[in-house]
Length: 395
Image 1: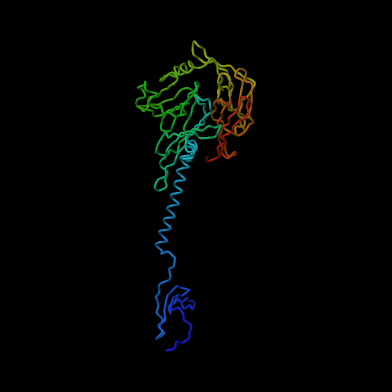
Image 2 (image 1 turned 90 degrees about the horizontal axis):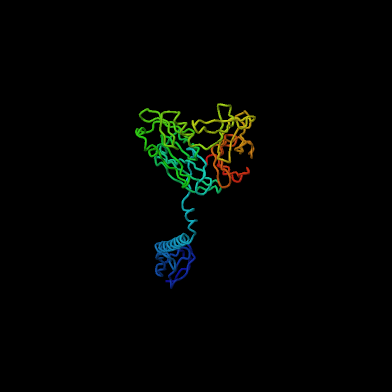
């Protein structure tokens, strides 16, 4: 039978584009369907198996992709390990631990390290512990030590772990005449600063180890100049002078014990004499202090004596009687009271000060007019500001 001449279409997709594999066998160039012609009845028989050629099966593609990805991961891992092993150890230690951000509401003070002479800024930081319901009922309390010259944090000690968050969290620091710094932490705990090793040390129990009167524990404690006001849990009230380890309920004994440790002379502002600057001495026979006005013709307004030693005195005083106004920071001659240098008056609060290698380190804070910034000024003996470690609000 003669063959009719007609266009042969792919039975799968209808395309007429094809290639002849062998006699009467074709492959569709559009969908790769193979088909052949039955010459007797012009039947079109379909072998619907797409042409694979050099293409990989899906499983083969997946295996190849997995191999490639594994190789890439191995190369990256080897690169990371080599980089870690060959980098500088100092860089490794500084980069491995990310600095934690705390709420700093627990008190702060600047002091001098007795071994290096450097200024150190101590801040108490509160690390919030987030509960399952996003509540913050517990905190970790950290003692954070900072070099205000380099502006770098160099130590972070946890002093309390997982304690209940205290709304009245502010701690109280007091610098005693001999340079010892005490801190009262909420919960009637007593600390001192190890100024050689930059460490906050709890002494609540050890400080009264020779005094059974305090065996019942502390009910209430207040820091004063060179002594503590105490109430034991049994209700008895005492005074304690740590310099001579005196625990007594006699106020006269307290004053004698305090002044027995004082130098031959020192300066103080007498709040009972309209904030006059007094030069003080001690009667060695009675251990009673005596004072004379050092600057009878100068008027001070709510002054603070921030630091003093035999040769240096740093004070802060309002520039005028307006106690909402600016404050002057000054260095005075210990013998005459003459001004050695004076910083421009500014609406800062000055809190603590310490001697350091560069001169003096002085802690400051501001109110709303300076957006509640705080920090430490490092000032030379001549009164030049060398460094300003400024902390912005919330930092």
